Amino acid sequence: MNETIKTLLSRRSTRVYKHDQIKDEELNTILKAGMFAPSAMNQQSWYFTVIQNKELLNKINEVCKSIFLKSGNRTFEERAKSKSFNVFYNAPTLIIVSGYEKAIAPQIDCAVALENMFLAAESMNIASCWIHAITSFSDTEEGSALLKELNIPEGYSVVGSGAFGYKASGTDNIAPRRENVLNIIK
Ligand SMILES: Cc1cc2nc3c(=O)[nH]c(=O)nc-3n(C[C@H](O)[C@H](O)[C@H](O)COP(=O)(O)O)c2cc1C
Image (cartoon, rainbow, N blue to C red; front, side, top):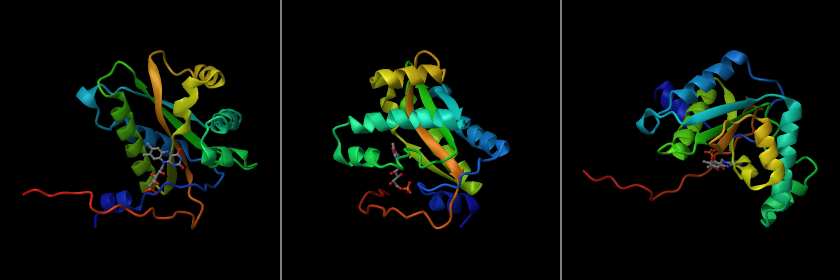
């Protein structure tokens, strides 16, 4: 099995991280991988916001907490009530990917960019996890204010975000894969 396939099969959504920050060279490689994803008509409709500032990460976590508490979803509410709640599992780096609303396929462009970044991270032994909650920020006043503070350009909406950090050992569970999801027609 070649290294690319090994990386692809070994990537897991990680929910426990070491506190150490990833190196700038690693961050730059991850971002470059995101920017080299395919995009509809090569529009590259993404915008990447990297947050490594602890205070800001805490602020984002607090907004996620209040969104979860008001969500009407019992699982989310219970999670948010926990004292140790941290929506990005205390990962030291968060990359928010926003898409240009008028592009052909911003959601898909941004999703493939995120996956490219997850795979690049995995290849450097850096763990990652997609974090969805930030997509609801624009629905709330405090979330919208925070998005403004992050300087996401006008006309862009958050599609998703990724938590990144060094792996804490022995923490990944392999999520089982569904069968009967393919049909090969020759
Ligand atoms: C669109 C999308 C949203 C996701 N949102 C979250 C999330 O908010 N929090 C989380 O812990 N994992 C999230 N995940 C990760 C999935 O739970 C994970 O990919 C799935 O369970 C399979 O596990 P694996 O990534 O380890 O293969 C998300 C994944 C996708 C593609």
